[in-house]
Length: 321
Image (cartoon, rainbow, N blue to C red; front, side, top):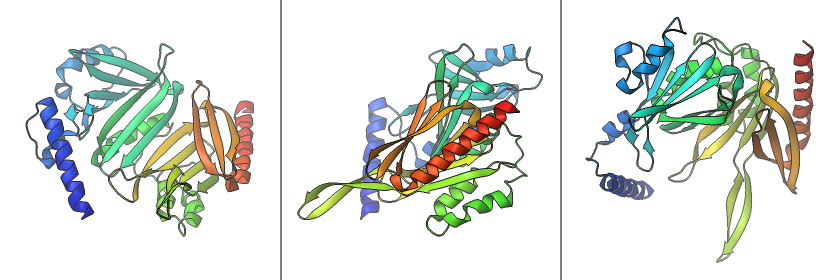
């Protein structure tokens, strides 16, 4: 019954969107393919709007930069604008279509504060947060079909300061540090293992279950809300990785995740604040002024304090090196 209702709702939303924007009907396959990102290699594949940028880049770059394009397409709710992301030697450049021209943002690699990946079934996004070359705090987001998420890996590896070598995997000994999560939460065990880079050493890993609170009682039944999703914090010798669960938007079940990769060099301070009896706030203050906040069960407070101490030791060692 739920599947029938979901199908009916999606049909109504699709029909409303097509009518509102005066768009011709499209098959499901056509809509899915329209959301695929693709890599751009030969010069003649570049959309004409952006060709002058690549012509001017020839004078400073020896090789054509690794480039991914997310095309313009009409989603059921949000219209996606054509964007290109280019992986240069010392920077990531984002070009976004704007009318008959385009907007340009250049993020030097050492000014990218963190990267966020979100995956929910076939819907994925890649976000960069940092400071552009002109000193302006900014962010850029790319939305695309999950089947093409592999195209963003070379850019992600570059930002996380590692070589793009798909033949290598993280060390088995380090991956084994997440095996204890498999009994209670195998999904997060796999989430954690896929996050680790080759050669990266896990200093500490914390897994906090979902936090729920009672909200209202109706006819003797109590209804609650999710205050904080299942959450993991992984401190390595190179970065702090935060992973959150994403709730299914169209029904029961949690199928997706959000990964945030934060270089230790971009973290100014880690702190905790108890909000209520069973919930505490974990705050990450970044060097660019941004602040990321997460709610953990208060029971993991000793582990969070250990993580903070480990972070301070790592920063002290890097400064004295």
